[in-house]
Length: 284
Picture (tube, helix red, strand yellow):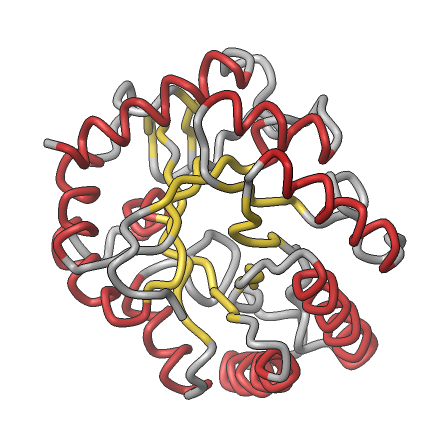
C-alpha cells in the first residue's frame, strides 16, 4: 500500500493528546514536527465515527490542508466478528470508518485481529474463521476506496505475535490487508526476537507504532509507560532493522497519555522527545 522511494514519515497518535480536540491535535503535531496524525476513532476519541457527519469530516480535512499535515491512520476499536449479536454492527461500523477515511484522504484504518480469548461457547477454530471472514468483508468494502486495513499486533487479539499475525493475514489473503507492527506487544508475546520479528513481518508491514515502557513482570502483566529510550524495549535494534527492509510508511508515536495520564509528561514535551529520539536512531 505504501508508495516507494518516499522515505519514512512520522505521525503523532491522538492517544497522546486526550485533552485536545482534533483541530488542536493537528496544530500541535505540526508544531512538534510530525508529518501526519493518527486519530483515535471512538466515542471518547477525537473522531466518533458513529456520530460524525460527512460535512464535519470534510471540515476536518479542509483544516488539515493549510497546516500541511496528513492523516496516517484511523484507529478503530471494533473487534467482535464472532458473536452473532455483534458481528453485523461491527462490520457496519467499520465500513463507516472507511468512508470517513476516504473523506480525510487517509490511506489506512487499524483493525484488531479479533478477540482472544474466544467468547464463551465459541471454539478457537470458529473464532478464527469468523474473524477471517469478517475482515475479508470489511477489506472488500475498503478496496473500493483504495483504503488499506492494517491489523495490529496487540494483546487481547488473535494477533499479538508476528507468527499469528502473519497466519491471519495469509488466511485473509487480500492485497489491501497488512500488519500494523506494534513491536511492544510482539516483545510481550515473546515468540520472536527483535530481528526475527521484523524479518517475518517485513513483506506485510503497512504501518508502525512506537512506544516504550519498563516491564516489571510478564505474568501478571506489570509495566509502566515511559519516554522512548528509557524503557526495556530494544528499539535500537528494531528501528534500524525496519529501515533495512525498505519500509517507507509512517512510524506513529502511540504515546499512551490517554491510558496513563500520570506516568507521562505533557505531549508537547514527551512526544517531541520521542520524535527526536526515533529520528536520531534511524539516522544513525
